[in-house]
Length: 149
Picture 1 (cartoon, helix red, strand yellow):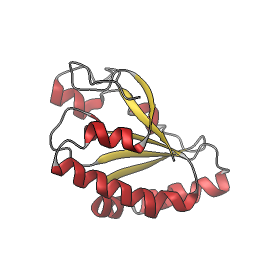
Picture 2 (spheres, one colour):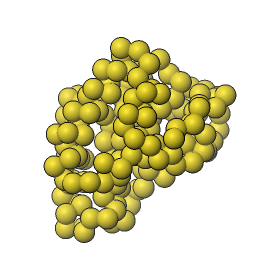
Picture 3 (tube, helix red, strand yellow):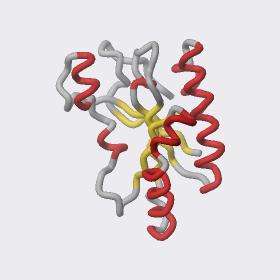
Picture 4 (tube, helix red, strand yellow):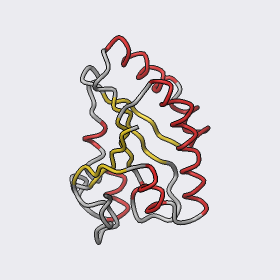
């Protein structure tokens, strides 16, 4: 279950396991957000499901109290995949990053033990951009959504 946003307009600290319908019910609050969500669902269908079941982390301004987020930040958790499978998927995400963002309105990143930066962990803090927007410390903890596909 997804908790209510806190006074800062962020998810409370923690990893919140949920379903795609849970996310849509809470965050598809206007036509712009619904359009982003439709792109995200197309991304899942075309780019994620062919690789099998995996956790997907959802974050960014889409999971904040922001009427017009730019996109939906997504981390594909490939941690349970052998490197010989995960690294080519990760490379494809990096190589096609701008194309995927334009096509689906998702900012997609991989997560795997052999990849140095764990963006699922990084996205559990406000970060510089959010900190500047809502005037908090960039290390301000915040929550993230995790959906098992």
